[in-house]
Structures are given as structure tokens and as C-alpha cells.
Length: 137
Image 1 (tube, helix red, strand yellow):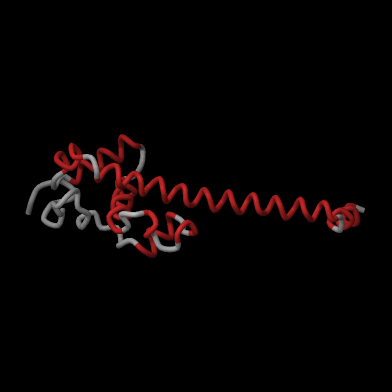
Image 2: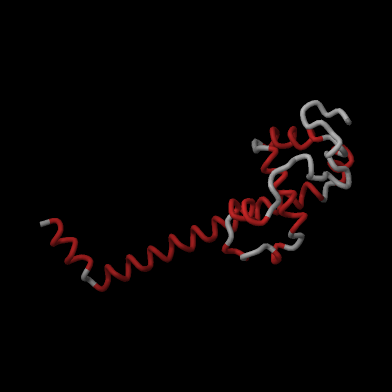
């Protein structure tokens, strides 16, 4: 009985229209939320890059990014990816796949592998800097 009631409902034109419109709402919301995350992290990278006080404080000091991550409640990896996204695509319109991309896809496909020793906090590379203790070597 339930199945025949469901089949009767599905056959109704108004119900088919309801389903199609609801699917469109879900698709648009998903699309917008993915782009909002990409845009948000890109803006995070931009904000950090443009802060002269942070640049001066963080020169060669990887723990500055780790401390910032702790205070923001996010991982330092996320901050490094945000910085890489902004550095590689200084204009959001240059981000590959436009608004169809997710943050995860941007990280996995278009950004370098996470290597905190290669991310710069201005012009100073961490390549000669111990990521654990902060000493030069």
C-alpha cells in the first residue's frame, strides 16, 4: 500500500517539480559552501601576508605560524595552505576551476605538497631552520 501511494505521489507533476527545485537548492547550497571555504582561506592567506607586523615578527620563526594557528583554533597546516593559495593565486579569478573547486581539491591538485620548511613568511625560507626547536643549522 505504501509503495503504491509513493508511486502515485511521484507521478504527480507538482511533486516532480518540488523534487527538482529542492535538488537545485541543495546543489546551489553545496556549490556556494565549497567556494565560500576556498574564498575564506584565500582571504586568510591574504590577511596574513599583508600584515607587516606579523611578517617582521615571523621572519624565520616557524613557531609564529604554529602559535597563530593555536590562537585561531586551526592547524598550522591550514595556515600554510592558505598562504600558498594566496601566493600562487594572488587574484581569486586565477584559481583553477573557478567557483567549482573545493578547498580539498585545491590543496591536493594545485598546491605544492605540505612542506612547512618551504613556505616563506616573507622572504625567509625555513629550509635552514629546524621546525621543531627553531634553531638554524
